[in-house]
Length: 381
Image (cartoon, rainbow, N blue to C red; front, top):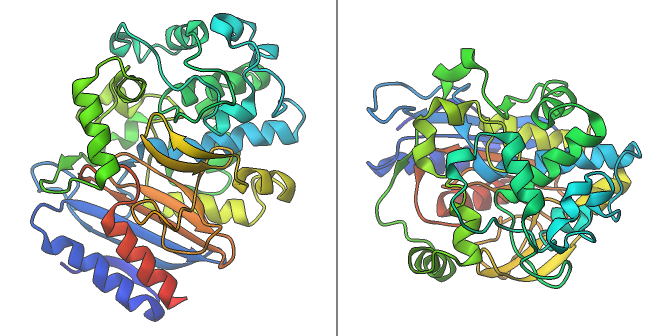
């Protein structure tokens, strides 16, 4: 399938690989953007945006990027740190007194950002019926007891991350967190990313479909096994309480849902542009950018059930782990989303990369399609 868009001649192999993705009849639609030094060198899209395969994918097609939105929210909190409204090592209950419940009185912003806070999930009963009620979910998060002592273990906060950081933003700034991100990050930098899609843009949203035979690596298989057999395991609850998955991508409530840890809709160029703005110093200064990208945690993640490295709200490069490596430099950082969306940056080459798709498999970290594209892009540099 021929892709639409533009591609610098140096990256012709990237375009060819992107187009070859669609040789698989299961593929639906995808977008790819690569920027170098803030300049776009690859901006491609192809396929269809709907389940019936009748609606063409366009440059402005919005894709649910799931957890790839987490760095936007992390940077929003770091903006407030830079302004003196938040402090990385101040207990969260200093700003949000109710959060001290359940032994959480010493949990800090730094620990939440690096997934070492001991607050990765909500225990049963199911919170799915109330997931769209921000105040109720914040109340439940504040009341949740620790899973382990802060700073002692690593556990990815799939959804709790959004409620904790979002409520901190709201308490110290006064703005609803997704509004803060829109007014301070996405709109000033022209980023086509929405945390809660405006109703007039609903028609741009692409719907997800699952591809068979894409099982992922041994860690991904082990995680699925736990989730299917152990309903009260922290890993199961982190991803299912409340339930967040591809089924929601056809629900208008989900489209407009403002949960800044797990629900963003964007384009490939919107995601790549975020990292270009970050590297270009348009979001936070060099000191906090260094903190954002510095290793803060590195061990077996009790939620993802695999070794992980995190900065302050971003996933760090793991070159020894093929399924996790972003196939660029050793200091590459970024984040994946459920089903394949991913965005990241290599600061040494000043490269920003964004990929969105609605054809999902069971890969937990970097999708094989992205690994091939990133490898070819790195070679072209």
